[in-house]
Length: 98
Image 1 (cartoon, rainbow, N blue to C red):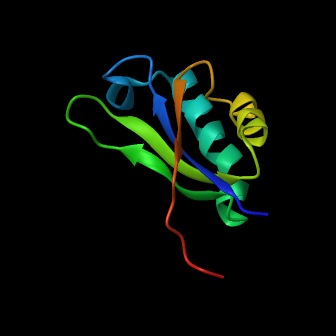
Image 2 (image 1 turned 120 degrees about the vertical axis):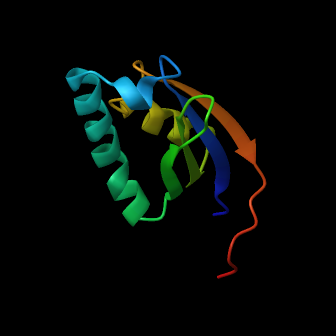
Image 3 (image 1 turned 45 degrees about the vertical axis):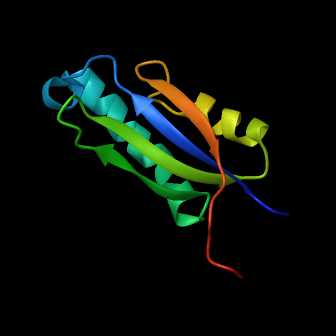
């Protein structure tokens, strides 16, 4: 089946978040990275990581899933969902031909 691609932007609760996370917030973000790692390994997540924007850092991911329901399930289970807010954007991806 052809995968659908989505660009995810993870917006932190404040623009200084990457610089002044509390110990609790840092623990949540470590769980967030650990949560997504298996999806990076299996190819569901093409790229994932923080962006060092001078106006305030945020996270991004590009994911390939069967449908939007699968994506919503992944986001809902993310430990950082709630502390941070996701923006989800469908995209037309150019990928390597198999």
